[in-house]
Length: 190
Image 1 (cartoon, one colour):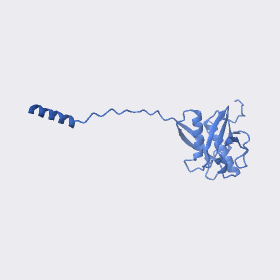
Image 2: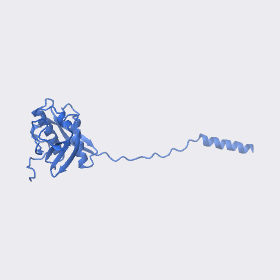
Image 3: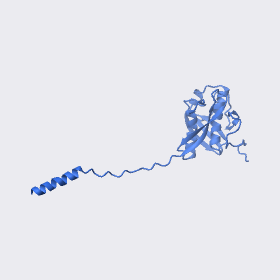
């Protein structure tokens, strides 16, 4: 009996000193991040020209998401020492594409927060239009909306009653960026 008790205690001690096996670690595979390189246009430090800034946008899985992310990156402003072209309180409400025209609907903060002035308004309009046309070559022009309604102008200097085609003449380098489209009439062909 004593022998069985000693044997039982030794067996119990062996099990107590043994660490339980570690459960296998389950690895959840993350899908690879989808990065898309885009070119954004911001104002030069002196506010006279547009300057390109490269950026990677994460998880651009479909065109709508990519368009929104690109416009939002423009709203968020440059990561370099360039000057923002959209007021920080600008809100992107929606986007819609019809043929080669993109309708961009902003909240009223675009107008309320814009500093005004001809050059500033030109830089705002063409930073947006040129950014979108360069990154999405099937787009040819942009229609500006605020709170769902077409606008005539942001602060009285640039006519926005019609969709605005790209114009690369405000770029710091007089040459259109690589991959930029030649100027075509809307609905025109090459």
